[in-house]
Length: 107
Image (cartoon, rainbow, N blue to C red):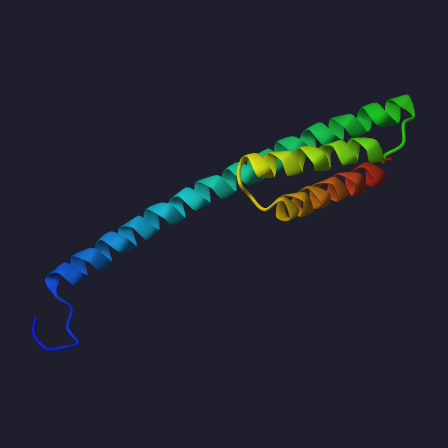
């Protein structure tokens, strides 16, 4: 390999190692994403069960005190794992709203 624009053997090896590392990291992200979706599905299933109990007992769909507890817990968990609390709370607000929409549509 000659010339200024050609890569050296070491540079090629370093690039290949970096690409391999990047591929491995992307695979790990894919696994995590799948886990997140699985957890959302589990959460949705439990929320649906809660909706059935609420309906059977004549309870309202919305429970603001419970929502507040969920949001507080989300913030605490975010801090524990050093993740942006506002971002985590925004995700949980979305999950709660999705569950409420689902609960209302089944009543």
